[in-house]
Length: 190
Image 1 (cartoon, rainbow, N blue to C red):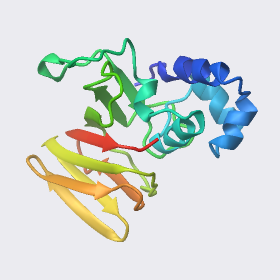
Image 2 (cartoon, rainbow, N blue to C red):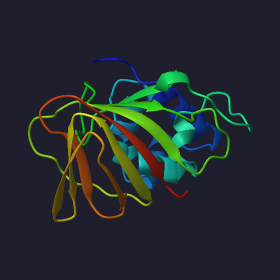
Image 3 (cartoon, rainbow, N blue to C red):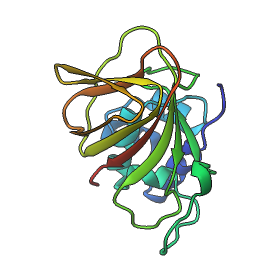
């Protein structure tokens, strides 16, 4: 699915409000300027790792990129149908298609410490490189089969299975053969 991501505008706004150039953000987030430019223009389906680094460089939570109109009270999402869907490419550095579609379940919750999502996971061919970031992740498989590479271990999960892990350990999550759906709660300190 080749759809422009709404993340770019938010990244650009945050960068400009901090009076940072694209070059300064690229250096602070350990990314290249071309990636920052493509993200800001909505021309790239990003992987999560660069976004974690960009969020840290901007001094915000990852969820800030999804925030719309923050609320102090509870946020209700009926039937898991979020108006906030963000697509990611997994670990592909120059992809134009999505392998992960994140449906944020709390995008409007102000000052949250967790990021709950329903994620549609599409199979990817080829290698599954590991990446890491600060924080923790809880994954619950709703549909399909998921393989999680965690350090030197491999975990196969099917509907009804869950796993909780420290995301500082290099890891990768991907669908095995067919589309899968998971609930994920991600905690990333900022």
